[in-house]
Image (cartoon, rainbow, N blue to C red; front, side, top):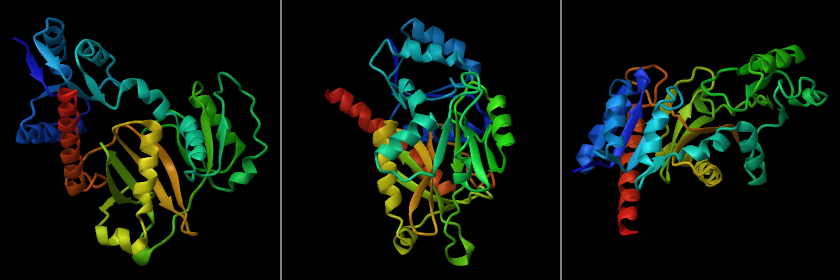
Length: 305
């Protein structure tokens, strides 16, 4: 008889361990059956799935982007009634900043003034005549990069643009005006990272200089007029169709909310109690609780269907 698992948890990054094991614990408390898959038991897991001994109904994949062999896991799981938290086929479009920039503009979401450049490999020579409109300093970032790789945050010259395009020559590049957030009471910068988890919206303060998080309290949302954060990320969710992601939003000096970093599908969930730049523990726990509840809801829907 096959072992049917409600949620598979695939991971490989050492700093994901707490997040994964906390999800596993939350599943147990909910009465859901979870199964942790890591490089050390991947081959065994694949063999069980190929033999029909193990069936995974849902999967949180935080490994295949680094270890391609985890794609075999997804391939085998698709033979049954299976879904992924962040469907794999949606990711190339969702994480492409150039594509999302244009989609956001069409949806009426405010974004920085941006110049999109084709990849160096495709077009070494591009029109840079409008660079002055960006102001100085400006931002240079690859369209499909992550974790800050290839990003230049205080660019001032054409040479920096050329150098960046050559370093990651296969990718498109975005040149963006640098957004300066409004300074609120006690010098707090109006910059936010907002998590979207299965319909739930969880906003945080996030300092764009120190990269340090703080909890955003309900009374602060009201005090500073931040309900727009929820409206924006729900619009983004309708565009990218992902179940779990984060975005960065800044409130400019004129009070306008600007989306400055579009769709981050692989949220860094290290906790603040262990890492100075980690997510506040209460926020991480809320993300986990909502994630597990979302899985439970989706699985129940599938049973009814």
